[in-house]
Length: 290
Image (cartoon, rainbow, N blue to C red):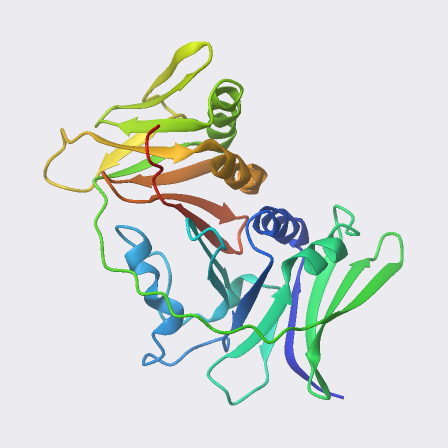
C-alpha cells in the first residue's frame, strides 16, 4: 500500500479553526493538492496576486494545498492556501500537476471536532482507495489514535477570473479588536459601513436605536494603515452585511492581526494567517444600502 498524498502537522488546531469558519460558508469544496515544488509554468497556485495589492511573501516554487470557492450566495469568495514547506511532512507521490479532492466540509468539520488541543494530524490518500481521504488524529501523551475515512465527492471545478486591482490601503488591526467591533455593531444593526482614511478607521451603522459609530486611530501594536498609492489622502468605504463578517471572525484565534483591503465599490478582503501554515482570504461583496 502506498499513498498518493501524505501530510502531517502539529498545527492541527489551526486547521480545525479554519474548517469551522469555512463550514459556515461552504457546503463542499475542491481542495487542490500540488507537489512540494511546482514548475514555473504552473500558474494556478500562484494566481492570488489579484486578491490583494501585493503577494510577494510567497515563494513561487512552493506547492501545497489550495481551496478557492465562491459560496452559494455568490457574495463570498473563500481562498485558502497551506504551504507545503510549513508541514512537518508533505509528500506528493504523483506525476499529475495537481490532485483535486472534493470534500464535504460538514463531514470534515465533524471529524476535526474530535480533535484534542495538542493532537498531531495526518491526511492520507491511499493509491488503492482514491475515493477516500484518511484523517488520523494522534496523541502521543495519551497514546490515542483516531482514524477517519471520509468519502470524497465529484465536484465540478469552477474557474474564477479575478481582474488585477490595487487597493489604496493595507489596514492591519488586532484580530480580537475586529471581532469585537463587528460583534458590538451586530447587536444594533445588520449592516456595517467601513471607512478608512490615511490614519483612522471608522465603523458605522444604523439600527432601531439610531446611528452607531466607532472611530479607531492608529496606535503602536493596534491599528496600522499603510498607503499603497501616491494619493495618501484618499477616503475609501464600503457597506457590508455583518452576518458574514461575523462568520469571518471565527478565524480570530488563528493570528494576532487581521489585514483588511478596502476599495470604493469593490469587495472587502479580510486576511488571516493560518498559524505558520499559510493564509485564508475571505472576500465579501458590498451590500446595497436600505
